[in-house]
Length: 274
Image (cartoon, rainbow, N blue to C red; front, side, top):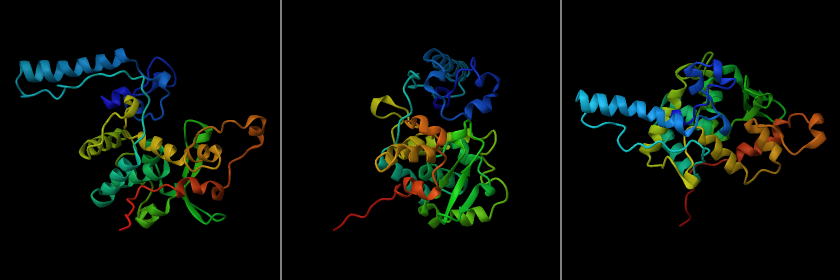
């Protein structure tokens, strides 16, 4: 149902020609492009027909339908952000308990603010080094807009956790398990982990928190220390706003100028003074 609520309407471009796998992989679907409440209710009606009416009531294969208690809320509410405490729960758990692609994906999303699809499709050649700032960064490419192509500094915490060693051990795609049509597995695993950690699906203003909410969390946190909103917009791949006619002369800021946007992120638990 979380996947359904994030689906775009297929009657408009560019979604009209997409396969279901491509639709499920869509990130940042504008609110006006999301499917409506009626479509969400239709999906749930189909699921109830299968699980409750057929498999439970008619066939008796299930003792209890997994659709019991599930409601179809409106899709008009935008995605929400996780709190600092909740982000610490996520990162602390995966550092200590998780392995493989899930651990790397969650940490990268939490410390870059990059989209799920941008992380899932990373290749070894996209992990680069900038001589001017003496920093490693991710070269995000092939985005849906020109602004999506950008350099994202790699947080020192990721380096301390062995990210560069992991990259050096790989050939080609960093996460082949989820780089293709299996990308929605990321959202599923994160949703299951969220529930396991006892983090509510909906929060203030009834906003949904899913995998994409890691991006919202980074943007929300970074807005507290940014010197210039254009710095934040460049790092996360949004169009620079409020620049007027100067915009046509403005090119990307050097990596050294925007590094602080990422460097100030901290999802680690702080030790209390005795």
